[in-house]
Length: 472
Length: 80
Image 1 (cartoon, rainbow over the protein chains, first blue to last red):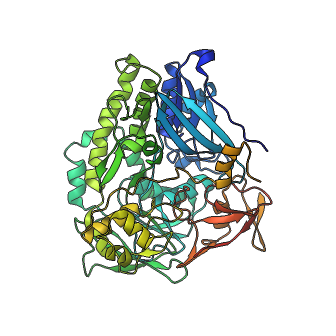
Image 2: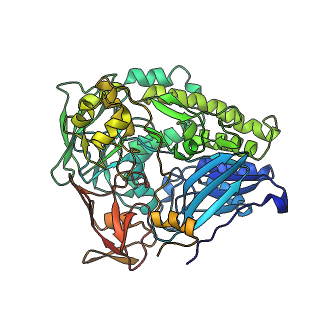
Image 3: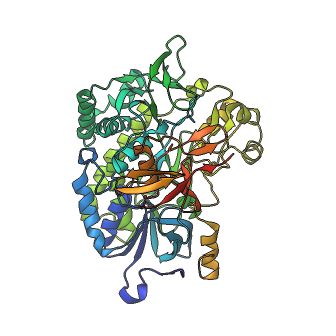
């Protein structure tokens, strides 16, 4: 087999601006549609086997249509892509932008297969729409089989039509817990309860002052609340799973009331029998490609995001970003930002009439995102539900105690000494938790975002690019 | 329907399911040996690498990302 190396959208033949889009979720799809409308030659890459991202994750033969929201919108967006070049199953492992040219290197094929085909792309502009993944905070016992992220429960229910257990406790923070509970119920697991860490005070501070900002989102939320009622699922605020029980797999959980700082309130613990747990305390943006391209990232331990201007332009020429990488705001925000990013990347103007709608939605949804963080953002007291021997880094099995003991060392030294964050996931799963533990112990953690390899690829595949064919 | 083998055992899944989907559908929750016990799916979207299996002699395949193909041979991985 030889590696096919293609350069996409040659300026010479059409003269059109070449726009590459990374990510086929709501932001990337909206970017593609807008860039095409502005006359660009568009190439879209997604690492998944199907377009849609996490929000529209699906399989034609397996997905229960009751679990899809805004499906008509997805079909419209997908429909215009016959005018674009689309690569699914594409893992981008190198991204550079210099002198106004963006160069991307990917391998395309079945996930983690040997001998995937190399794909090189050169473009005038790129839209980074790589999205986010779940942020599940560690809990004692969370490495037991049967514990998954809320996103995994959602993905397995929607994409594969299965649930990990038959009795599931959902715990974490934010409105995403509601569709997860609905999906679990539809796919065949009883949801024993949904536990939202935020208390009424926080929820009120987040949502009550400007309830009209929920407009556009409210319909979907009302639908989920209806689903909870239909399935008789209790929704409890100010509480959460603080320990998972079991020896070889999940047998139950300990639920406790949490104070406003998410500290378990002594005396409120109670055991609940279950065989599966779905944890979701928020989302972490997938910043790897944006960082590799040199885009400025800003924020603090509450979250770091790609900095963009009104045009969704990053600090690097020709590099745009949209969706969750610029701030956690949900699908509606991502659709609006994607439309702006794609249109501007294609050389469009912000005062073009076609931008009026997306700009208005973006303004409204940014307010929504701020309220989301205020109502459901992670509070620092959560680390008090950890034990000293709780595994924090799941890849390398590093405990809270081991990390805390090295908290005063510089981050690199701490990671090398403990191996926290150096395993297969490169700190994607534990980074935020490790930072919180280091901060608790008086250290100053920063910079878990930078990773040497953007996507998992095999060394043989990288070598193949240099030698002209996959390594035998 | 598709049929894959996991170790010595044949299990059936639905067309289009991921390897993780087939395993979970067959009642399994864990299929990798780690230092602290067995692991299965955790993130479900290709980020955490907890669900790695060997597929047709190729190591390190994320079970949650790979679509199962009829006849796939899946082996357990043991990692300290």
